[in-house]
Image 1 (cartoon, rainbow, N blue to C red):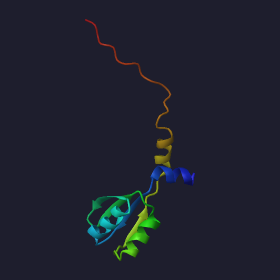
Image 2 (image 1 turned 90 degrees about the vertical axis):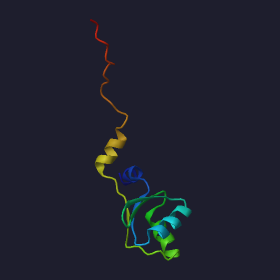
Image 3 (image 1 turned 180 degrees about the vertical axis):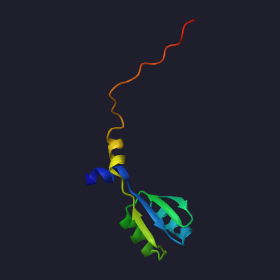
Image 4 (image 1 turned 90 degrees about the horizontal axis):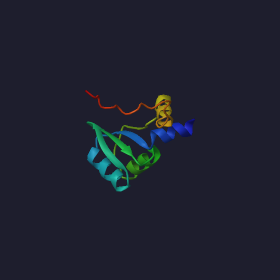
Length: 97
């Protein structure tokens, strides 16, 4: 189950930092996709949390929080059953007058 949840969550990490431009530059250069989520908060994908911490530490970029995104059981269930359906509706026919 843990592997399934990790697969659904992907490698998304939330980072809180007062040094947004510096953190963005370091992580982007390392191959991550970085997006601003809120003032002082970045969402990072493509790097695990441990690597984010290591890169920021090596570059002396200050941060206050690094949190890996965790998928819920509901998200995992929806991902697993995305293509499954019990029935399909027939296309609507045009009404004849």
